Length: 451
Ligand SMILES: [Zn+2]
Image (tube, rainbow, N blue to C red; front, side):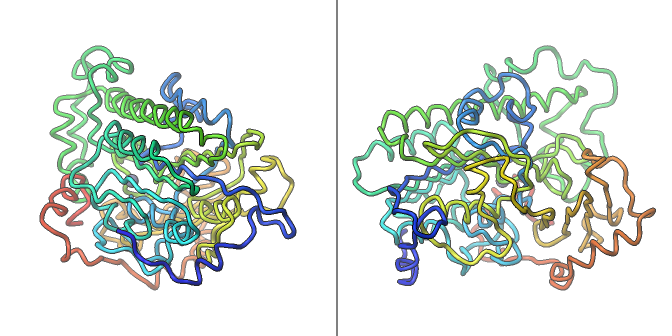
């Protein structure tokens, strides 16, 4: 799977670390990057989730900088991971949906680290993500079938155990929290007891949402006669809990390897999940904050732990790693290094007040700026955007309950003016005709094809 990175990368890779001029060259740190698919921020106990849901992530968070206001650049898996690996927006790297079949032209983090002498390994859990992230890794799993968290952890632990003299970059992706939420009976029992069909009211599957073309067809049969909305939420929590256990096993293996004291551990969600908010059920289509607000924690050995409330993004991963690992990946005009916040989460320094979020296939775009948020449809026929623009004063209405699009036309126009490139681009469909039948079948099962 190894492909040659441009020679220029090797030269740039020798730039000093930590962003400071005149710093003594630090030891080359290892990197463990873990992406938690479909994991909203408040799935973690340390960010407001159920008590005991994520003990292993919480323990690491207590030794890390925890970012309480981290947001994904986009709401689909492949586009988001490419933003994590390049520091570029989806409309900049060009992977705008999950049906893209090749990595973008943009330089990927693994290419740069391999060129810099790192031993690199990537373990995505699903095929459609593997096909757009495979470039640059020395060891890479193409994924014949979806890998469970225990399976992927086993593979990563086996790779960690191998002797090596070079620093390493290990990427592990956990997909289990994605719907359908089907935890083991043991994990399910930790979060729900009783009969999910006994609550008063109609079956959840009767909601009009489940008739929309954009809704995964597998959701309604999975819900069956369930009437209790607490049940699917509990099953989601149980899936996150199961991932947390495997993450803990991975951290234990890192400790056992002897490398932990020199390893940056960066963990984040690729996007969130709506559990019924805004009429969107068990899915992450749309651009409301349940789909975008993610956990992000960065552990750097020797750094004091802390918590930051600054507005940060998946776009900030690459700039931060550039400073921590002493490499340069690519220009990333919208990303910011979190390095100053890792040193002091309360540092008094200018910071961004604006983020923009791409919807998959550029069906829509959202901007949050100065306490306001505009969700702007680009495809007015997309089922979730038919009601038109939504404007929220999120500084006072973080739950996005009060749409002010009609009453604040001037503010809507002002925010809309920042979104010209997305509006000009229009809806984008990728080269899905190159997909093999098995990949198409998987995407349809996940509800991503044929929109
Ligand atoms: Zn995802």
